[in-house]
Image 1 (cartoon, one colour):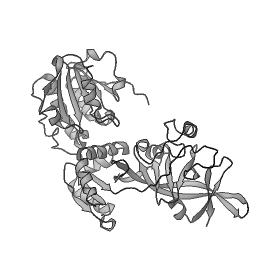
Image 2 (tube, helix red, strand yellow):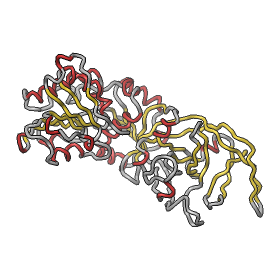
Image 3 (tube, helix red, strand yellow):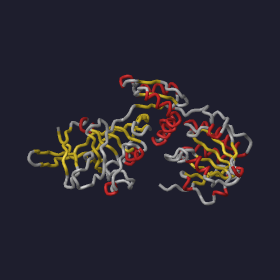
Length: 422
């Protein structure tokens, strides 16, 4: 989606732009609407962008800048842009991020070449709340006005306020996932040590560096209700990490190949509703189904519960996922196996499909790369196999719905799954 510049409409027109113009870059800029609104009420005109590549050619006309430290997967996007040499002389820059240690720039404000001043303000979940927006905005304004040494001293900037648990639950899954990524990147060394020591589950709360609870066996993992009660009693966001989701992927060269030596999962067709009939890989060895959260949103199906973080041994980074449970339609067949193969479609059936909706699917190890020919259908070509760009189906679809299945080759030699009445 192309992002257009957003020029705010100020509630007090007499103050519009009276204190100057700000360029603000954050890939989740819409989630900072309370803080942006406070900056506008103070008297700044705020121009918002989601990528540095979208910045206007007239950047030299601006004096004030607020940059997220991490844009997309680049955890150094903000600091790298500052170092790139494209900032105007005498400009004042705030790196507003949870990814950069303030000691990296020394404590407080630092002076760069050409009179540029830069400060770091820590951004955590609490900064998205309405209650902290005014305090943070006043800190920003004070720095821009040159009335402070830039030590980020407000309680909000230093974590004195935290987002309430109910407010967190009301956020979109994508933003909840970002909070989980923020927390992991800030504490990944500690989290890694916990799992390296043999833990299969660990629970942290926002603002706490040590795990609140650790489990070394699956039987000791608290239920969702127990974690929910703990979160409500502390009124803090729980960050729950579990051991690896198991997916033993085969190597894929080209699922559309007409050769018989292609090693890949068989393909099952599912009907998710209007315009959403999909051929998807079927992992007969996995208990659970994993879907691309973008696809789940596209078919207007909701996820539920809190996001869970699953540690991935393959990548060293967690996968953030939420549970889903909805109905899909499948074709049913009668099969006769013998010297030949005879099949007859005997109808369709509504079946239950449940599992995990995975955030950042294309960046996870669930998605697999394939050739251009294989990827040309479905979503835009990204190199992700066309039979994996929406999800990976597990055998629970068979076990939960009293079905059997058979695997055959179609006319193009692809392995396909036929679902049968048990």
